Length: 149
Image (cartoon, rainbow, N blue to C red; front, side):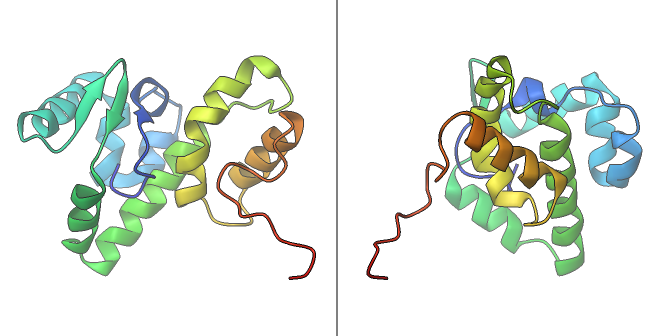
């Protein structure tokens, strides 16, 4: 969660069991997706220490907590967790960005996808398709370019 955007994270979407994803994430993040009890224990521990807040299935991590968490990691560990965050976010994206019923999920995951997914990834392609289908070609935080620029 430290690598995601500071906006609320839809926990139910991120912690869904997905075949093969837990193995792909390795020994640090894999158990969180492989075992719901492990995930619940981890969330409870984070709440106990006030590192996250949980309301209506959405988890919030303060920007400062995110920054300090990332800063305390070695470069190699940070790269592993970044990759894990990207894999989880990408796996949570619905397959059909043209289906209006998937748009609420895309809207929840958009800031996190933009925070962790690499530019040429399949997930960013899905996000771009969603923005096009939903009529938001610029995206919520892209600045408007003036004709004189």
